[in-house]
Image 1 (cartoon, rainbow, N blue to C red):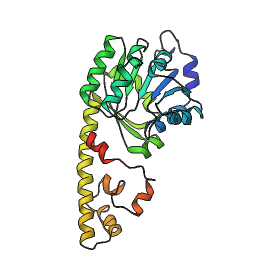
Image 2 (cartoon, helix red, strand yellow):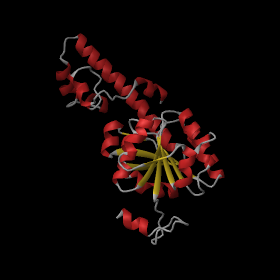
Image 3 (tube, rainbow, N blue to C red):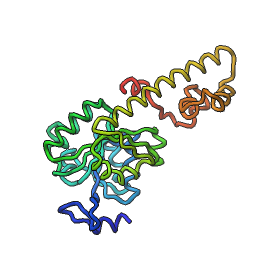
Length: 265
């Protein structure tokens, strides 16, 4: 299906014969615990993918299965119509977009820039304004679901930006997620993600304190888990991210949501 869509693409306008824009080449920046799986899922759908990461090994893992590599964000931006970034912090995003070798220095007019990092909503809004001056389109599109959802392609995307750009991005985002939600203007995706993560942090603290109390009172943690997860105290933290060291952790292979990341959010 994708091959048919690409074959009908007018490379000058980026439009298919049916009047819908179709991206023939995708750029992906940031191949960490989340981004590596997201990029793999794009490849699985048949897209031509160009990747960039400061970690050469991370890039090699993708080029070994069919992706091309870029030497810098600026080089990538010259060759693609849409770029997804998945980076750790405000500063990483600003560096990728704004420095001498940044995306904004060489992105083609009408390119779509999708930032799936979790950052300050005001940073997203600032980048969107700079992108607009250059004739570029910008969406903030943070995700929820964690590493397992990134692997399975079942992430939730919280998208901020124009309705037109949201519709333009949906097909691509559906390669990586199962729920794609338009939250409003640029920055509102980040706002939704931060509110969700605040609630997650609160529930994780409560879950940890409940199990700590249970242990101090002599209650077996496995029994308490069974009770909580079939009672009114059930939550994502108790069911899927249980903080008790031991057999619970075997489900996660050591890849957990770091306390430092919650504090950053």
